[in-house]
Length: 491
Image (cartoon, rainbow, N blue to C red; front, side, top):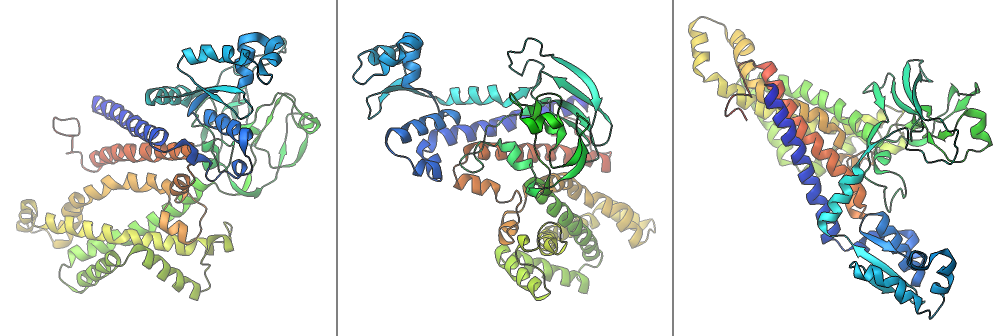
């Protein structure tokens, strides 16, 4: 079994990187690079050489190409002292400076001013190599670059400033807190290893994509806390997120005894991923709480009133388009004084959650009811059920001890995926109620040509989907020990 799990994990990892690689190649080779500037307000204000230079720098930052400006060409060829002469209008030295790059296969381009620059657009395999090279980041004591000869580089144990639990800290790393514990899931937090998907563009420019997804929303939330210097004040800074800051100001010096002063902030509202997960998980609990008992009741009373009513409900929700159902239910909610848009009352009012959660739950119940009914009726005709009846077992005992146990296995297989994929949000429901969650992120990122965000979300959703299938298979073996995935043909 251990070997099987390791092989499945290996296959899952390969599948994830295969999907992400395909997406990277499609984005960077099939979509014109100028599309990334269609929604860039800054680019629309520029023209001429300024616009060309801006685009080249931004495309280099986004990983499309390697850009060498005229200043870099001249500095490389003639040094700082000869740079100005090379850059002078009509200088013949510019051709000489560009020649080595032309020999390397770079395209030599010319601005309207006459200044030349070199561009190398990456091939598909170069794109992949560069992406995966920077993807995995390991923080170390040598991460901080400083000219201070007395700067101490070390790992040491300290305390979490919020609960006093042990925390692994570092001097010389990018993050001061390498590992710490608190009461929020997953309870053990670390900054030692992270994935770098680049920064968001053109929306949330300059912010790492993972931070856009996981950072809180709304206004900053201040809490009473004590800093390294002993200062106690109400502040929104998250001390466990602090990174090294080359220059600290007077306010930083009042709070911190070192240069680890670049910190994220607490927010009044949860992040987009947390918002979707809260809505999705509550809706899932309601869906299973309603769907499973009704499915069992339908199977136990086949062709009776309960079964016919359930079938009518299933057919109705399957037949009605989801969008129409959502807007109909939203209209019903407004009659009871519930908001038709999530931001009207915000995160802190329970009424904001009622209709989105109820709609998500109701949309999931038909498939649960239908499949559980089908599995149970199918099992009812099995030989072991006939044998149980012949032994004198009551119909209730047969349903509870035999039929349900076997029929529930396929349902159990899908539970991990249902729980884990709550994180991805519900596109239509979140759009209809303007919920600031994960549901709209991928379509919005595609619409805005936010390539790094698209790649980040594809990686997350693919990873969750693939590993949820593995967890579902393993859970089946717990429910029914007769199932052995490790045997030949078990895959």
